[in-house]
Figure 1 (cartoon, helix red, strand yellow):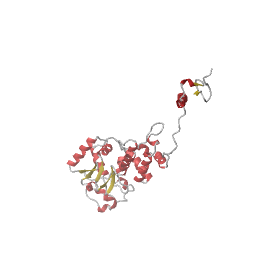
Figure 2 (cartoon, helix red, strand yellow):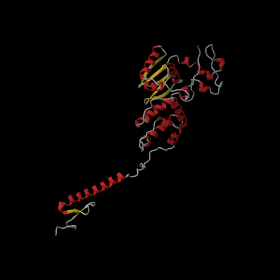
Figure 3 (cartoon, rainbow, N blue to C red):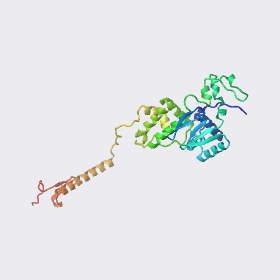
Figure 4 (cartoon, helix red, strand yellow):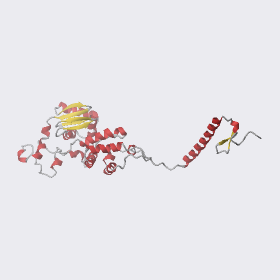
Amino acid sequence: MAGYVAISRSLWSDPDFDDGPMSQREAWIWLIAEAAWKPHKVRRNNAIIELQRGQVAHSIRFIAEAWGWHRARVERFLKALKNRDMIETATETGVSVITICNYDKYQAGEKAAETPVSEKRDTTETNYKKDNHKNQTDTNVSVRGESPDQVYEAVEIYHEVCVPAGLSRVQKLTGKRQAAIRRRLYDCGGLDGWRAACQRVADSPFLLGDNDRGWKADLDFLATESKFTKLMEGGYDRTDTPNRAKPAQPADRHLAAAASRRDAWLDVIDEIEGQGASGDNWKPASPTSPARLSGPRGGYDGSG
């Protein structure tokens, strides 16, 4: 069977599909869908990489997480694609830049959304007008407007800002997570707003584990609508008010009383040493009260 079909990038975040390990075909389609459809810049590992049309830039670890594969399997698969002249690879600042060979062939339908059907038709492919269907922009592989890499950039920002503060790394970017991140990116106006949200998390002692349970926030917390709204409204911001102390327990009160008596005796010893008095010049007023000095200041003066 020949020809082409338009596939939405949102396929990877559709909650109706299982998030299990991808097949080799799915991995290949993921690479095509993930590739830049126009030149633009992306941030990877604190470096800015300029992508050309048909290029993908991710670390092998990130790709392995997205595909549900082991790192070694990803490397073998990319090597096989390269040997078949399907991709070219290069490395920049620890990130693999993958170029899809013949990208325009796979994306031949991309211009269809802007061209009448009569001008772009052959025996193996049928393209549609831009207004042929109200959801055309959702079903075409090409995504206009926001970069298709924004979800992955959002995860990189989370790793850059929150992980050094003590939060856990993302091990798997499921479709459900991707959909939630897209919604939060829309809520906060894009990557700049997302970075600000991540910084709020990193600046909040409570979200970093300074609470009675030792609980810490994570990516799912950040992507949850109610939590995200509270975060952006300052509900988790750092305050100068210390954590409320727990009520003292009976054992704590006994220990505090014993410590107080010990301190009282230590004060008496310090006073004796300061006056140069001997052990015969003082005595305790009661078994539970600090000792009192005698001598010139009063009390026992040595007389019968």
